[in-house]
Length: 321
Image 1 (tube, rainbow, N blue to C red):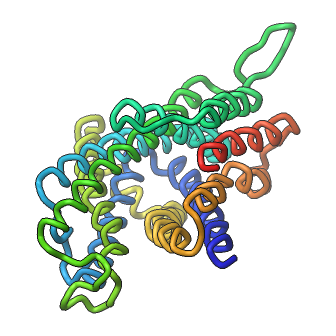
Image 2: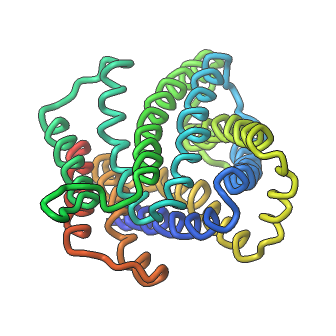
C-alpha cells in the first residue's frame, strides 16, 4: 500500500502546485513566472544531479539524447507551460487541470504515430470518456443555445497545455531510450551508484532527473528569449515579480511541490506499485483541486462541473488499466 499512498501524495502535491501557480501567474504574468520558475527548477536539478551523479550535468548523455529531450522541452515546457499559465490567468487552475487530462489521449495518439505503439480498444473508449467529461464541465445551455461557460482564450490555452504535455511525454520517452542506449554503450551499470556521488542512489533513479535538467535548460532559454522578444520592459517585469513577496512565495511553492517533490515522489511511487495504478492516482488532481480552489478563490462549483471532472479522470485512468 505504500506505493499507492505515495502516488496519492503526488496528486496532492500537483494540486498544491496548480493552486500556487494560479496565484503567482495572475500577479506576475506567464512569461516572468515561467522564467523565474525554470531558473529555480534548474538550480534544484543541478543540486540533485551533483548529489546523485557526482556531476552537476547529465552524465553519459549523448547528442541524440540531448536532441530529443531538448525537443521535448520546447514542446512540453516552453509551449505547454506557457499555455498552462495563460490558461490559469483566464480560467483558473481548477479548469486548467481539467484540460490536462488531454495529455493521456494525446500521448496515446502521438505514441502510435511516432513509435508504433498499439492502442487498445479501452484506450479509444478512454479518449471518448475524457472528452465527454471535459465537454460536460465547460458547455452550458442558455436560451436553447449550447455554448462555452468559460472564456474561449482560456479553453484554447488550457487545451494546448494538455496536448503539449502529451506530445512532450512521447518525445521524452524517445530521448530516454537514447539515454539508456548511451549509458549501455558507456558500459555503466544502472543498478549501481555512480562512483564519487555523495548520495549512493542507483543510476536508473538519477536518469529521470538528468533528463528533466536537459528539458529545463531549453525551457529556461526559451522563456527568457520570449520574455525579451515580447516585452520591452522585461527587466522591469522581472524586477517587479521578484519584489512581489506573495507572488514569489507562491512561485517557490509551485516550484518545490511540482518539479522537485512531485517528480521525486512520482519516481518513488512507481518503485512500490504498478505504473498503471500510480498513473491513475496521479490523474486525480482535477478532482482533488475542486474543493480547495472553491474555498481559496471563492468559486461557485456546480454539480455538472464536478461530475465532468470525475468522468474526465475516469477516462484518463482507462489508458492505464
